[in-house]
Image (cartoon, rainbow over all chains, first blue to last red; front, side, top):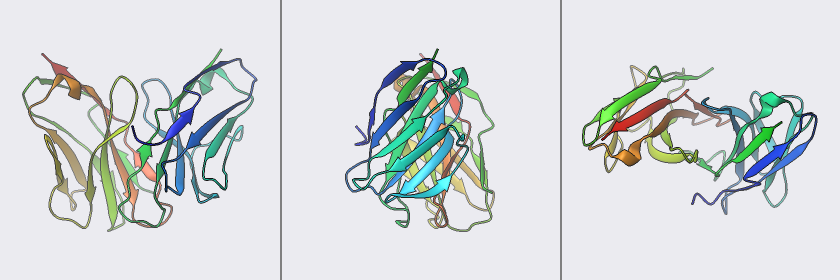
Length: 115
Length: 115
């Protein structure tokens, strides 16, 4: 158990809909990362937050948005869903952006299926 | 921009034998961190081993060790006494020691362990 909690674990929804994925980082971790992994693909970096502020942005679509709240949990919002958005969405956390040598720990992921 | 390349999409190893997975990266930075993550069929991302670029000594974790060649920008993973439970997708990752601290992952190598 990495200590990173993601909900829901599985989600099936229709095209055009909107969903919210939630992540609780490990206790004490300030930084949260979101990754997308399509079937048999690598990990695509979406976005990173540090202590409530956006720190880095990757290949995140305009239909997607995220935020990190004062209690450090994070939410990834996916809207106007398309079939191609079906993927495993990972959240990961680490202690601090400035803490050299830190390692990110992954949650178990949220499986999103768009039908 | 930094890149991580895993040129072996798939590898096979006989149980109890040794296998080496390759990873090369491109960066102009001198200080960074390198990681190997394992993703078994459960799809959870599990940290295998970590290497700090400023350390010349290669990291080891039980049956897992790395061959870190900084000048060649190479970071291979050696698995000794391979076990059936080692069968998984293995991802190499790079993280800068400064800047955005974004983690960059390779495309992965699928390891099959033959009984």
